[in-house]
Image (cartoon, rainbow, N blue to C red; front, side):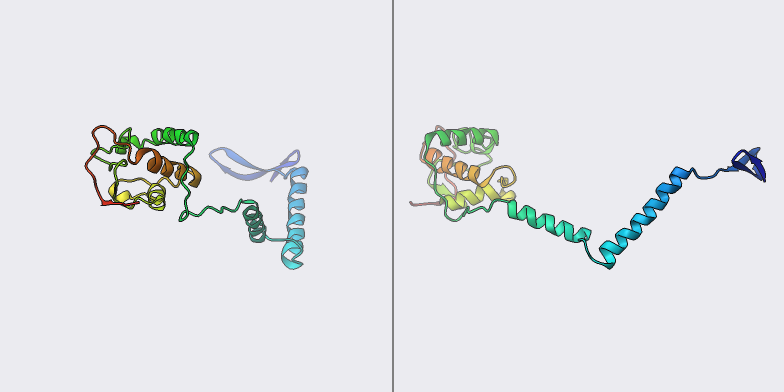
Length: 186
C-alpha cells in the first residue's frame, strides 16, 4: 500500500484504476458520534424511563386536541326548518344553477328526460323536507341522482330543500314533465 499524503493507495488495480482509502473527515465523524449519543439519550428518555410520549401517543394527543377544537354540530336532519327569506332563496337559486341541478330537473324545476318534475305534488322519494334533504345529501346514484354531501354543507342543503319546497313546488312552469311517484298531501 502506497501513501499519498493522508490517503492510502490500494495495490489492487482494475483496468488501470486504483482505489484510494481516504480517511473520513473529522467533522463528519463528529456528526456521526453526536447522532449515536442522541440515539442513546432518546432510547433512555423515551423508551426506558418513559418520560416523554412516543409517536403514537403524540398523534393521539393531537387528534384529541383537534376533536376538542372542532365545533359541535347541533344540526338534526330529521327536524328541518324551511327557510322562507327571499334573499336566502335567491342564493339557493344560484346554487341550483351552479350545481347544474337544472340539467336534470330543468331551469324551472319542471323536469326533463332525466330528472323528475319538482313543481308538482308527486314525489318519488317522499316530499317532506326531511325526504328532500336526504335525497339531495345522499342521492340515489342507481337512479342518477348524485350525492351532494361532499359538495354542499348541511346548511346549504337545507337552503336547497327550502328552494325546492317553497319556490319550485306548485309554481306551474311551462311544459312540465308528467307526474312521477306518489302524491304527497300536506
